[in-house]
Image (cartoon, rainbow, N blue to C red):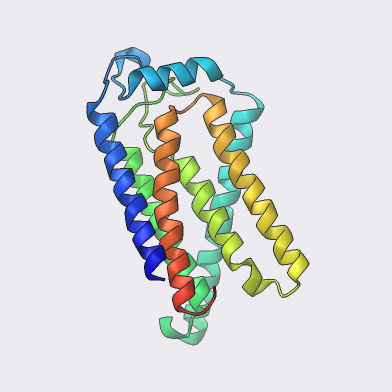
Length: 217
């Protein structure tokens, strides 16, 4: 457990370090409407190589985001029902409670990074009139934390080992495709995706340490 917590802190520190780097290193006005972007040469090279793909790749990540949110809402609903029925947080299933706390934290971070601008998107999104905050990729954070945590607890709620393994594999495949397609769609810079992966890794490692503490891993 201590090792996982240490790794969680390490990934969080790397996330903070990345914020510092993209805020100060190689900053240039390469974004839409002259917005300034950190690590501009790296980000621009990757973006130009991949291009903008607002068809299948973007749609996949859009609807995968909806799926992740739906899963989170379901877990929060189960947690609320157990709390109402049992009239005590201590009597709520510990894994469900841990998931609820994790998803609330993700929600808070999602809103925070929509308001705090570190980098702007490489493009103005359809229906928008101005550049939007882009760092970290909050969709990447959603994919990684919600699908990753779902895979972690699947063995507890699916007693059939084959079904549990299938869920883990499906979550892993969707997670990888979601991150890759989000980058490939062109709606984020490379550093946005990296930031999303780093903060997600920190959250998942902390959650894994919690599961270990309550005897679920």
